[in-house]
Image 1 (tube, chains in turn red, blue):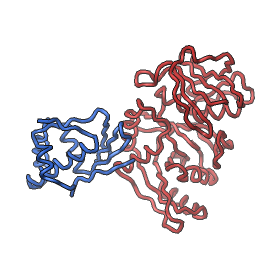
Image 2 (image 1 turned 180 degrees about the horizontal axis):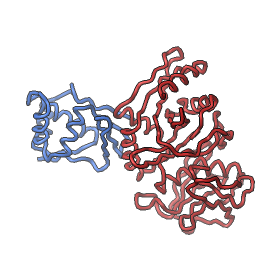
Image 3 (image 1 turned 45 degrees about the vertical axis):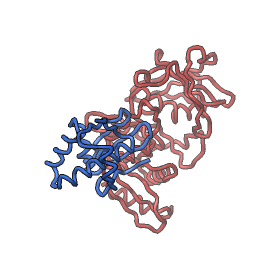
Image 4 (image 1 turned 120 degrees about the horizontal axis):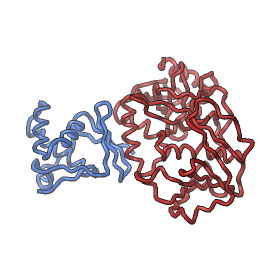
Length: 290
Length: 112
């Protein structure tokens, strides 16, 4: 289950699996060697770096507030082009020279589908790690190389259920902000175009977010400290975690996450930059969450 | 990038202020600036510069008064009722604050 959806890989047997229960939908993923986008898709965005490769968006209209739930494509240079057909409700792909089934899976789970969920307005996506503490989801937010993966990894090693290694869906249900688990892979190392190893302790259930922990490096001999944040400091934890930020989305994301900041406590954790002290940080966060 | 706008103890140049701004003027919010209150503090996003700003409690009270009132004079009167402060001090601080908002591109002031 990927963000509570199931992909039906029609043409890649190694990726095929039976749909689990309680999913929101099944999305067919079909190879289309004849795909030609250039005739109808005139809006081609510039190349940009992503996961060690170059990607670009292609659509028939520029993305905007009025035109976001539309058919569009993402080209990963020399690897593959993924195309969401809104009309057919399916994803099509065309292989590039460096295509492999693993790369299809990576780009679909890691990048294309979260962007699609944002564009379609189904969830907002946060670039955070997330695990359960006593059955409740907590989020780890940080700057790049700020310790999200290390912290998530340590919690998984200690038997906590994972919701997200890298990106998490957020859905407002009533007055609560629910964490939508992403995919059951974890990558504690930094290797491009890999989802990592499968995680057995992965929840597929969405639950209200209990807290956000903003991780900040401190000196190796510093005290482990946790303080509650307020106001703009609280909002920063969400801002650091932006996954996709197209111009037309800025206002809605700002409104959504400032409102979420009113409902979800955010704590700053000062983490001594010494792996040997990770157990101490772990104990403090667990104790704090309880 | 996050910037804090200090409200108290802002550097004030009376000559400059008298020339540029007075209480009869009206503040106009930039279309590209979004504002939301979080825990009693106003969080502002300027789409153009991509900067985020946080206002303290007093800055938030001024921002909210500006949203509700037509002219700076009306804002001044609301704040004068709300805070125990000398009217001269309040006027100086209010105009200083609005000037900082203008300098940061968050608002414009309608000329007389």
